[in-house]
Length: 453
Ligand SMILES: Cc1cc2nc3c(=O)[nH]c(=O)nc-3n(C[C@H](O)[C@H](O)[C@H](O)COP(=O)(O)OP(=O)(O)OC[C@H]3O[C@@H](n4cnc5c(N)ncnc54)[C@H](O)[C@@H]3O)c2cc1C
Image (cartoon, rainbow, N blue to C red; front, side, top):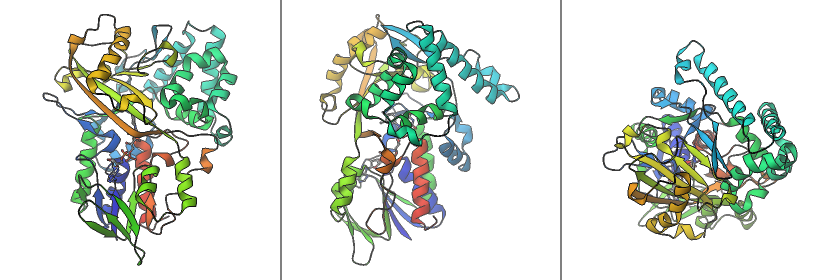
């Protein structure tokens, strides 16, 4: 079959990998001058490893991406440190995930399993030691987390919001200290609409060990793209697909800037809204459903700094009520050694925002001006002169918002147009979107396109 794939992010590349392996003729159309989509990295002078435009790691439980990496024979490039993730409360930082035992444990027989258990135990103890809320509230956080982690039934949880369920189950004070900041940080004004099944999946899937690739995610993506090419696939960069049209023979015609291409089957991996805009033949009853799918955008400022900024924290979730100009502070080099980046300390200050927010249009320097007081609250000695370079990245389609009963609103991978398929982050559920689920949905789409159900 002659197959066209729109988008060379993880979903598109994975689908292309599987389809070319089966001998199909695949062409990937990527609008940007680089592959990788949201997971793509960039390199500055003097860096050996690429850095993701948006902070990235995987979890030890991310089976689909780990399986793909194993199949590709590159497992030795994936490693799992246990960095410190923290909560900010009343101006103070409290590490919540911070290992009690060093990485030496992993070298013992059954060491990986023991080390995972030790990390979970350490998190439990740190929750119990979290002084800003009463002991009973801390206990409730532990019990609620354990209940969610070991309860396999999530379906009924999508009928209630996470805000309502968590504040009822754990109490207002525990909820406001631990989970509200997280929901607000991800979903902004929509955080009260997110359903509890999404939150359940987060608790079930997350591990204190966070996986990263030698050379960055870009190194993994480059290897995947290389395999697609050696298996006969074509990856066309700076090929923006402007229109998708069914032909009278049941094939799909893609409209590009200066030419057209006809394929037997097409997979679109961009946002549902983009699919609607680019495909005039889709029926109105179907596009109305696509329009209902809500999502947030993301804006991050990446700073290359001459010395460490925070006291060893990799990730700090910042509650909105603390009044910071950003809601996530991620010091990448407290996770991955800065020797890979020419000795730079690398920091992300980020936020999920509604498309149209002023941050999307601001110049990096203006945004930095806005962010510096926030960084100085993390380290009062932080000075502008420490900054070597600044980059700003933004994306309008970055985080779908799973509202009540979301399972009933997810469109299938087949569209109403014969031979046109779609696979994107809005169809990942109840799990939080991520590269693991991009691999899963890319493979599922490839099976469907190839005719294997
Ligand atoms: C701030 C942030 C942090 C994240 N952190 C993590 C993390 O820690 N771990 C994790 O696993 N995941 C993380 N993710 C999510 C992860 O990046 C995504 O789930 C995954 O990369 C989605 O891949 P995709 O291929 O489905 O979509 P995308 O990566 O969006 O790929 C779609 C591709 O389509 C292309 N395209 C768009 N329009 C056109 C067009 N008209 N013609 C041709 N091409 C087009 C785009 O340029 C893009 O390359 C994060 C995302 C964000 C935004």
